[in-house]
Image (cartoon, rainbow, N blue to C red; front, side, top):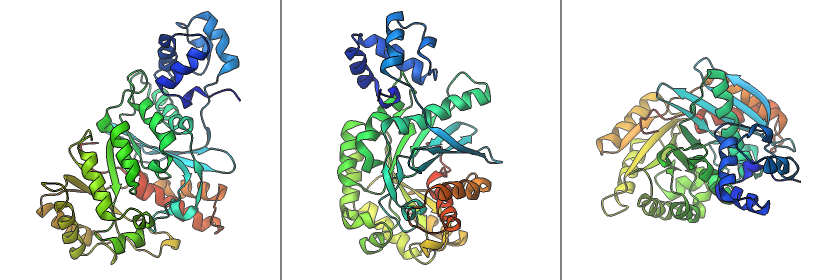
Length: 382
């Protein structure tokens, strides 16, 4: 099978070109054609040497993902379902704002972490995505939206790795994908505008700080180990103290001066005033002057298998005020694309449901992805 050039960062593409007897500047030209111009036909790449254009069709391809469906929300949100083979489908979502366009990208087909409040975890885990499959989501969305909006400049200004899967459990494929996103010869995104969301894979947080520090969002969801282990099973391996120590270390390399903590608000479970006061004490106890952080409070979208209920807005307001009174920046996420959640979730559930539940429950579970993982925080920093 010939290699898919979407699988390479610039160094990888340079190594590929070297195997063809070409110099590095040819890789840079090719990289620009693929990512900046969205080209798939090597004959379109007119500044490449004719000898290279002749070699490429038999030695490489530029192959995106098959689109299963597209759903357009009244608020401008767009969802795509992509087929990644063997009955597996992933979701990618574009959320437009007046001052930015955010793309939410998946890193795995399914998820192995199994958080109680996340429908993707209940769906089960299939496999890691390749670098090509991660980048193909951005490549397709960027160039499709440019054509749709009649634009030649960049449409997507922010990328959040908050779709299906735990990005740091697919680190080997994630890292080159991040490098492509940041490369000025490709998408040229700022490190501040690329966010990796993790449930707390501590060793990989440390590696990311060294290899490619981008903005970090951590799914916290509880102020103590007993509760967090119940909600986020990974906490049994990497408890809160270890996680926050890793966050403090990451902060020294991070492009932002804070770590974002995601906190799904669950009625009667983690949303009481005492939980908020515990969170304040927790973050202030880490790092010499306390851990610089921001909290995103996330309304929970219920699904049958969870056994959980969304906190009332009154409770969310009380909770957020306690955090803000302690000097912690706190936002409440607003959901986007509510009118297309069910339809998109139903398609994903019908194609593959690894738990064996009926397609109706799968639809409701998968719809959770839009409500929790895909929504964008009401924050100017993104």
